[in-house]
Amino acid sequence: MVHYAKSNDVLGTTNRGSAAESGLCTLCRADCAGKCETWMSCLKGRQMLYPRDFGLITAGSANTTHVGVSYNALRIQGYNYGASGLQAGRTNSSDDCLFTNVGVETAFGDTVQTKVRMPIMTGALGSTFIASKYWDSFAAGCALIGVPIVIGENVVGVDRESSLSNGRIERSPELDRRIEMYKRYHDGYGAVIVQLNVEDARNGVAEYVIENYGDDVIIELKWGQGAKNIGGEIEVGSLDYALFLKKRGYLMDPDPELEEVQAAFNSGALKHFARHSRLGYTDLDSPEAVHANFMETVQNLRDLGFKRISLKTGSYGMEALAMALKYASEAHLDLLTIDGSGGGTGMSPWNMMESWGVPSILLHSKAWEYASLLDSQGGSVVDISFAGGLAREDQIFKALALGAPYVKLICMGRSLMIPGFLGANIEGVLRPERKAAVNGNWDSLPKTVRDVGETPEHIFAGYSNLKKKLGAKEIESVPFGAIAAWTLADKLSAGLQQLLAGARKFSVKEISRRDIVSANRETERETGIPFITDVQNEAARKLLTEPALRFMTEAQDASARSQLIS
Image (tube, rainbow, N blue to C red; front, side):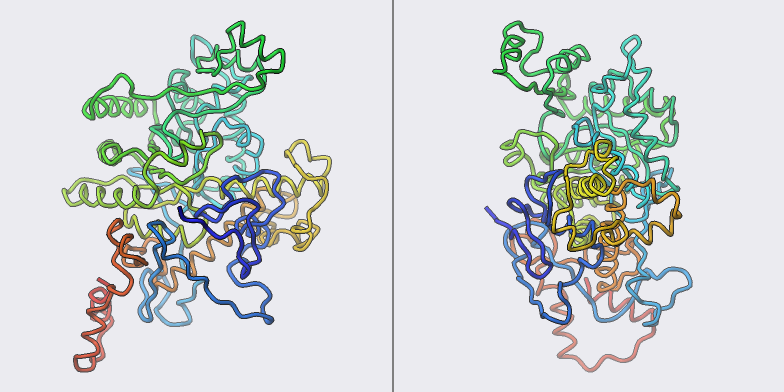
């Protein structure tokens, strides 16, 4: 088993618990007082791209990213000449080829393109209570950044204030709150994606969404996720609520209607119930049957009026991956999110999450292989989002490159929730009258925050830029968690721009598999990305043994570079 370093002396960061490949703690707490890299980036922004204590130090790489098959075993390739993807009006002069001029905007979709300011989106934030408690920060933050946010499964079903008529939802205050909070700050970039599972489909969530929000919302079919191979789960500590969920059609474990279970709960021997969602497609026994059902479901959604439809699948085997790619492409879906094992959870059986499914880098590598096969046959390929344990700007770059040109977005779960937790905790201290409303966990600012500042303007590096965007009046209404998200996104965006500039790509749309290399032979074998010293080796030997290259025209230079890279 690979163990990742808990602390980074160069950045001055440390994990409270054991570290995952993403750099996050395996158990991320909403009340955490710091200070992993993502946590600190929510406060200090792009300053976290550089070693600390400038003028007093030098820093050297730990160079531990070559062990095993993982995203850490991919390295980013740089080039010493050329420039591609320059925006209109820019030239290939050194005055224009600045990393700050790198464009990170992208788009996804089939017939309708959804614009995105940077190539990230959230994972599904569903019926887990932590998603509900910090939703205002998540939604406002993503809308301000200009990236999609996913309202996960079961939100309507677990809402005690929602009401059904003839088995269909006719009122859902919680779903309305979630969508409206995003819409408040939405300015044309990004989108709300509402997910459907078996219970959601039965409850008429799609009908409710289209009737109330129309084309403003993307609807997403749910096949699975990387964290578990069963349906969504939450834990409830109320017998009354457990009975309510049982009546809503959910599996409750143990059954709250049993007399002996109620007696155990009332005596204090039983303290919690687990709510589970159903597995899909249990009545089907072949890919052909799944295909027919899937295409019918997509058509039904289109008949309802949905112009944008997506699919989320988990870390099943290769057949399921091929099915997702082929069926989503045939149905002209707008996005397919492929979630590998190694990501996060609100509630999943721990050992299931540790031991089931295909690790992200392996699943993503095969996704590119299968997408290329579809492409070679002349068929369209659905736009893809990769998910599963990705958090930093280097991981965004690597995943985009690994899946290029089919991958448009990187889906990030826990890392985009951390600013919501952190900002809410700070807001609860600085605005004590808001502590309960924002679910703040602190009574005072910890030293990790005080070392950065003691007012919003000083604590959040992105505060001034966001204030300029919104104005002095509106900034007062923005949740601190959204300001923290804006600050984190600025760091991720700047880091991505720097990595792209080093690869001489001045638009994220130019990224390719030639921009990464494998740091070990096993990673080369599994990903199809060549080993680091094999890349350009023949071109290098040719350069050393043949007569000096003549000066070339710009077109010839671009052609030669393409040959060298490949």
